[in-house]
Amino acid sequence: MKTIQELEKIRKETLEKINLRKDRKGTRIVVGMATCGIASGARTIMMVLLDEIKKRNLHDVTVTQTGCVGACRLEPMIDVYKEGEGKTTYVEVTPDKAKRIISEHIVNGNIIDVYTIGAYEK
Image (tube, rainbow, N blue to C red):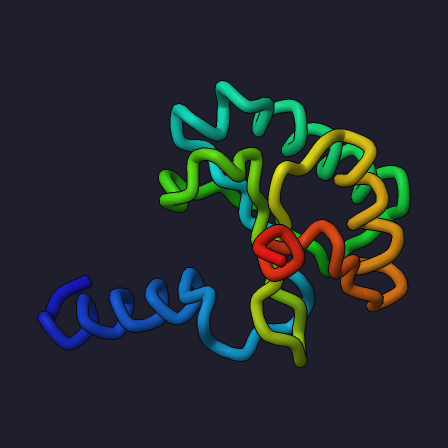
């Protein structure tokens, strides 16, 4: 890297890689891992998600983590960003719910409405 232009190019490429809001190929699952999420079991949920993805040999699914989501009472929470869909937020995720989210939503494309934040508020 010798110029400001080269640095700006690297910056732009990096931002494009990490931007969750742009259309991307595959699926990204984001686990809320702030203190409240961890206290509610988010580490276990993340490990279950990773295990299910590995068992099913899903190559187009990425699991990442984020900090505070702002709704501590609904933790553990995960957001699913699936190609061609909007964001889906699942709340009060348990290990069994996480497995079902992988099988029904990620693999078969069926959002489990009763686990989502919209269903929680009803």
